[in-house]
Image 1: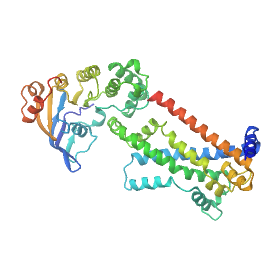
Image 2: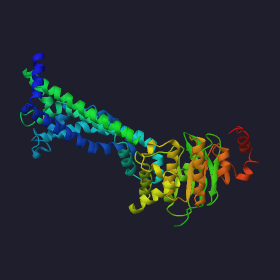
Image 3: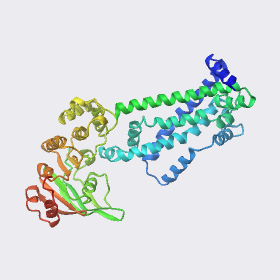
Image 4: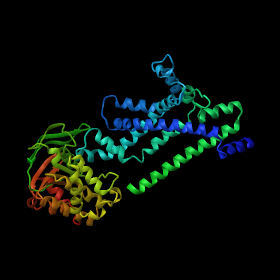
Amino acid sequence: MLDAVLSGLRLVATLDLRLWEIVGLSLAVSLSAVALATLLGLPLGAAIAVGRFPGRQAVIVVLNALMGLPPVVVGLFIYLLLSRAGPLGELGLLFTPQAMVIAQTVLVLPIIAALARQSVEDAWREYEEQLRSLGVQGWGGALTVLWDIRFSLLTAVLAGLGRASAEVGAVMIVGGNIDGVTRVMTTTIALETSKGDLPLALGLGIVLIAIVLALNAGAHLIKEAAQRRYG
Amino acid sequence: MSAILPLRLEDVSFAAGGRFIIERVSLALEAGSSTIILGANGAGKSVLMRLMHGLLAPTSGRVAWSGEGARRRQAMVFQRPVMLRRSACANVVYALKVAGVPVAQRERLATAALEEVGLRQVAQRPARVLSGGEQQRLALARAWALNPEILFLDEPTANLDPGATREIETIIKAFDAAGTKIVMSTHSLGQARRLGDEVIFLHQGRVAERSPIERFFPQPASPEAAAFVNGELPWA
């Protein structure tokens, strides 16, 4: 056991090429998915927070429920869409990193949208009268609030990133865990553990945790600085 | 620019939760004199001003301005100012932008407004870290920049110490001197005397009395107003 940990650390320390390829692809896939989901999720959440339309309460309940989507189910759903016989089969995306980005975007979008909805709605309660008094109309108010609370929305984005970088099921199904093509940290850990190659699995585990920790620390520092700067 | 005053309320009622908060109020607000809205807690002062300002829609009745474009010719200052997380100056610029003022003029108008309320030296400071009194002056600067024909103030000094209150009152007088119609609710009868020309006294959602200030305090016409004035604590 100790041997495995030491070997794992050695792989990390010696910048093992195979390991860093896997780490790089993981980051590329998860960060792309989170970027896409943020771009779509923040305006969506803000629109639901500020909008008044029939069925709004039902939309909120469904959105909150979708935060708990099981990754394997999302994977299966995207697999069916992208498989050769599926409606998007012609794009030939199955078992590519792009397919993994799509699956993770679908997985993360409800998390970012639902958390943004809650934050914007709380802020809107404070801002609404003032903004309406100034003559702000339509979505202008939603965008103003979104921009004003941008630093607290980092939490929503981080929650999305945590989900994306930690999940195995979706990327495994739509990516296929092909060595050198769609193999990412989580799928490798699952595979190598079952094969008994604990050093690589542990090395990746250490890197994964370190990355998540670093991102959260960075976001925390940004929020603290913004709090001091803007109040 | 055509005048939007007088503002006429015709048989305006507002109900919430099955209860009338404002009941069948009809009145006209003319340009010039400063109007103070008085009344006990829950008399409907805030709701009445929000109906006038258009933040609430009446349950029945009509709020009618005399001219076009009334939305852009009025402003409101709330009991607790809401500032965006940007500089004091940027908050004023934002209001000008929303009002459709051309980019080239925004900075100059904002600076002039901050100068007027004595906040020129903190123009670049984040608005939310200013003191309560400074934030309320900033709210007044935001209104000043818009050069409104009528300004609604909902207990603007309720949370402020006497020094900050004095500064706010000075600015409100400047609005009056510049020709802006003042409509203000307050709990301070002293403030009503200092700033008002006439009083609209609300009791349980109805206008119980409307009198010139110099008559209202010595001899209120309605029993409700008399009780209110006499009930004032001697040191307030």
